[in-house]
Length: 163
Image (cartoon, rainbow, N blue to C red; front, side, top):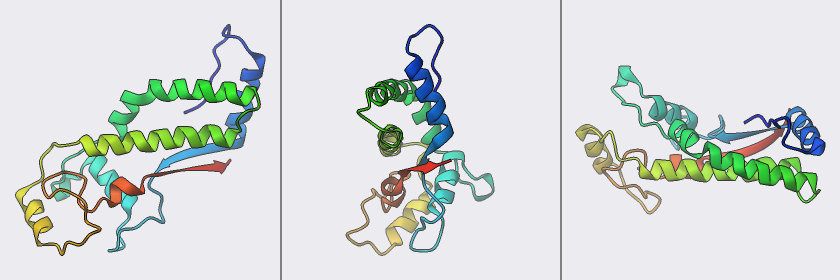
């Protein structure tokens, strides 16, 4: 999310903050390359497959990122306004700004993942889940899409990096 200040809405200091902010750091939310399942499979890859589907493997899309962005973008913008004002008052830093937004986005994506019920899992997927060795780390419901072990749900994170 790029920070923009509309003309006529006030503070030159907020305009300066937005320009400096966009030059210095970037915030990212998601699953990063070093995160892997115990099998070695990339969690980011699984997330992308679930988000967009994979026709050749008969995996339907179960989008959770795009709907979250659509439904929560205005909420995030309001948080951004509050945080920009805190920076202007020297009560928060640029890193704080992105960390707060990143935590909010991560939490909202988790909520969306938890709410997804469709498309339903194929019978073969349910059977495979039933045949897995289950232990206390396995938190998912057998028939619930996207939540089997809880790894995808619990590993979404945010980072703040220098540009």
